[in-house]
Amino acid sequence: MKNIVIIPARLQSQRLPNKLLMKIHNRYLFQIVYENISNSKLLDDVLIATDSKEIINICKSLNYKFIETPHYFQSGTDRIYWASQQLEDKYDLLINVQADEPMLMGDDLDAFIDFISEKDFDVSTIVTKIKTIEDITNPNTVKVVMDNQNRAMYFSRAPIPYPRDGFNSINLNEQNYFKHIGIYAYKPEILNKFAELPQSTYEKIEKLEQLRLLSMGYKYLCYEICKDLISVDTIEDYEKVLHMIV
Image (cartoon, rainbow, N blue to C red; front, side):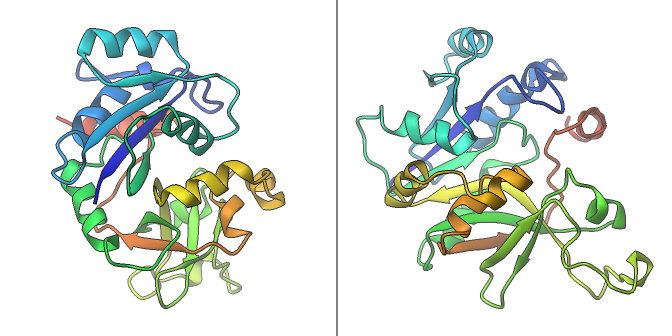
């Protein structure tokens, strides 16, 4: 099986502009992600897809593989689809790893690829257990509800499942709430379908690209990772990872 990670990297983040150029111990945020993922044993290639001249210049100085993309994409997956169409090689899995996931390591990605290698899915993604009520109520933490075969039923910024008896009734030692990590493994034909489809109603409302395919009945297989991955969406997230990464 031939696998590639494409890292969509744009600077126009609404919540934390230019976050990918923020430094953690003298390394750019996107640089940490690229270097971590490059340690994977099951990847054939790692590529940054960006419309940013600043990121391109840094990639050139570090000898990173990159492709310059147009700027108009609606989502990171639209960007990696465009990048994948420029490649000469064909891949069995096209994996979208967000450029703001500095806690994800190469061996985490290898375990993910191992898990899905013989499973039935259209898209596979990563989830982890939520450990605080604050994360359940935080709209920046994307929640997912799964069926008993680990397939996603819905993704939301809202607290799902919603505790009718109030948040004080939740016991996270007994009740599982899951956070979605923005990493997707696409089969090529499904990535093509994603690019063909218009944004769905739920995708527009929640601003969650995974709802485009899910609303059309495609199967999202979820892999649970047993570590706390913090994506850098806010300055508070940045300050957390600043003290966690050495």
